[in-house]
Image 1: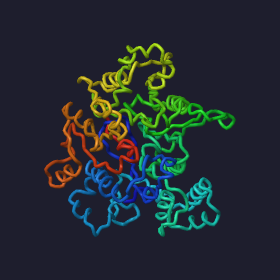
Image 2: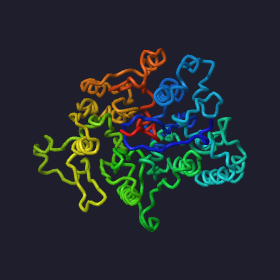
Image 3: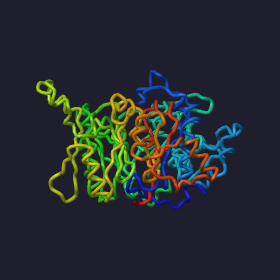
Image 4: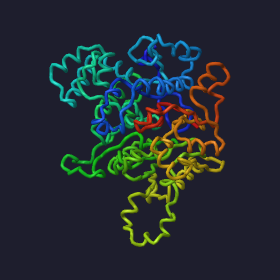
Length: 483
């Protein structure tokens, strides 16, 4: 069955309900062409070794998702899939042996589907070529390319003979940032960096044109720019209207969190609040403003949810900042404005409530969510990056100790390199297991995904972590069970 033919249901009303459908993009050849001099322009901290990243790391993520979301595609096939003679065909969207799941959905497959329409192919190719300043002959030759091949080119920037037409878009592996599903709506992003413009264009065309989303076209929301933005200076971060999916979390059907960060501006958050409340998508929106630093990037690098009553977070931004520093002599002659730049500010807007509500710290907000939004009756627990110990807290937050994806409540996916955070999970009663060992247990019928509870699944991370994004970033949930 083609993705275009499936009867698809869009509904995400939490961060922890059983994951049923997710949009991802496997690392493509463009990622292997990032050069050191352009790495930071393309938002990478380092170059990666593509083959190692795929075979030793990301491929395990695909297998894990399939076991939890679409086991019929993988159960009993691990040896066949991993056989050397298959040359990874199982993972290639353009190959006839591709897993082609309607639950673990590949962006490149959706793009190829819509490019089969001549009108869309002409318009989208012209748009990409305009953004990338291609000449007219290149544009015409691309239009004449097959939809499957054209989808590869528009993402990787390269032809089969390895000639590059334009830059790759390596950040497409972080599929959450192209948009976010909120209940049965999709909020499209407005990226802060030019390097992500083509991703946004491709996402727009997919969501508005793919038959899978036809029922929801009226529910696709786009953040408008500030009125007459083109007349404004627009140099200051807060003046630009930007919003990325890593700064948006759906906590309950009524409650959304939006981060103001290095990538999402105050203007972007402001426009999102007006848009979402006026369309009755949610009733309550909490703004969490974190320091605009590369260390943090999005709020999902600072905290994510594990269970109704359990959260993983960076303690230095999460706890009340009374701190011992305020008792030091320097507190009396340090500029308060300078100190406040590193503080977290939290303000909550609710439809029908005249005065916004504020929270002293992130822990207070998350406690309120667990008790009042999610009706948790268990004690609220916080698992801290690096077990809350300096310098491990900062080091492990940098390698995404707080950026975890919940496959279901209490079962989360993270990197194996964050030793102190792993120890903190164990201290709170969680089991840990390496993904390779877990897949063997699934394959040998020693365990099934439904039986896995309160577990941190450890993924290999030597190359993936160089890209500065964890599995929360590498997923755009499209459907979760209601909790």
